[in-house]
Image (cartoon, rainbow, N blue to C red; front, side, top):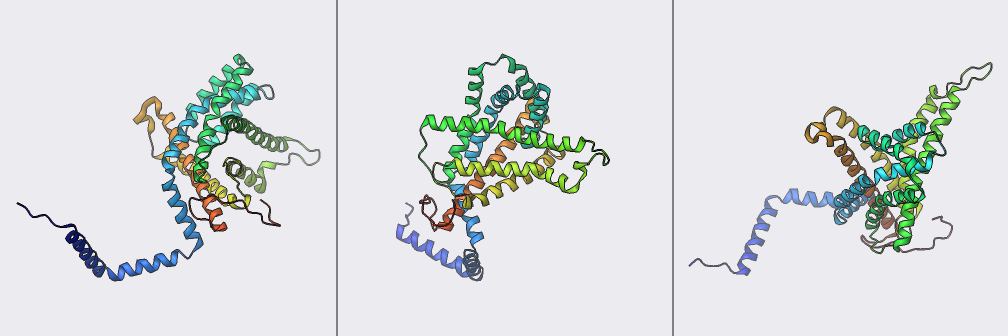
Length: 331
């Protein structure tokens, strides 16, 4: 019979193997330890380390997948609801054109899917009553429910608000997308109007040809993205949050979103061929991939903001920041 090794002998063998390995790689092991200790003295590195660790602990990849799923589910009802609300204010062709441009700005690489959905939404607007519009926003609010769960997870909040309060907040967020669209539309219309007027004796001012104004117009999508992330990180968590702690995460998320959007469009235009692999579903898959990437960016910004606040307050990972009165400092 084959002799069995005793547990004590196995532990001794494991210790001996570890000693041999450490002796063989001694200089490298000690150097790695010294480098790690130096890096852990740098606040920026510690913040990055804590953020990555929390992304892993909070299962950010699966949370982003959930947000992406609800984004696809809520997109069409949100379009129909916005068109029904905005049609009395703007011409239907104007609403269609501007809404398509607005969604393409934030959902790149999915022109065909968005174009088809907007056409269907415009066709349905006349058949919708008040209850139908409310139902559309009720369905569209599902995406904000998914975002709320992901953001609360980032702040380690495990207690939800009452259902009726949460649902009203989520529907208000869906309506706020319409307000954001109107702001974007108004800014674009104002620039085009000032560019087209003919001033006696001076001619056309050429507002859009001015380098400063042109650069400012290109910054508008970034500013809107930054505003969205700030509002999400400030008002969605079911705990006290502070402007001074959330703006770094919102800025990080907005920069990553704009850079990622440009890289994704370049990748889709030059390398990816989803239609060859998925056929008629190719544009839907492109939309799903981008919503997943943008959802992960949103969660990363939330984790960064929450960990930044904990570090500034001296709170351990996984603990809520207690509300503390700081005289003379705004929250």
